[in-house]
Image 1 (spheres, rainbow, N blue to C red):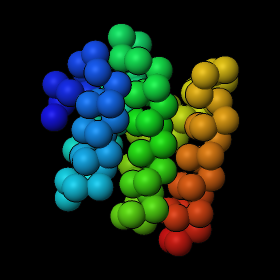
Image 2: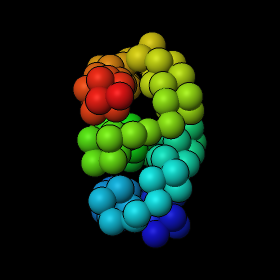
Image 3: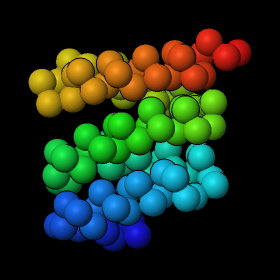
Image 4: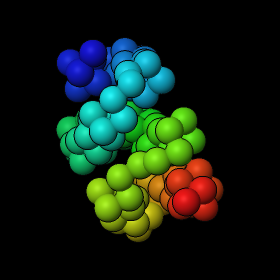
Length: 102
């Protein structure tokens, strides 16, 4: 599955990210894979964008996320033309599903 994320097929990479996000019970592992994917500029921007979105899915599904690891990345992405609006949406998801529920 990880090879598919880093591969050259966007459909395979997106399927792998969604399968991981919705199917793997290890939230911390999923976060690690998503953050690694986002940081890898060699991965297609569409796949990296989906990885950002999947962070929001994790917040909604689990009601928790490692805010110390995730929020700084999202705040940095907010400055990017490619990821800015998406990063803001995920920050709002985290505020709704994680921070407000505590």
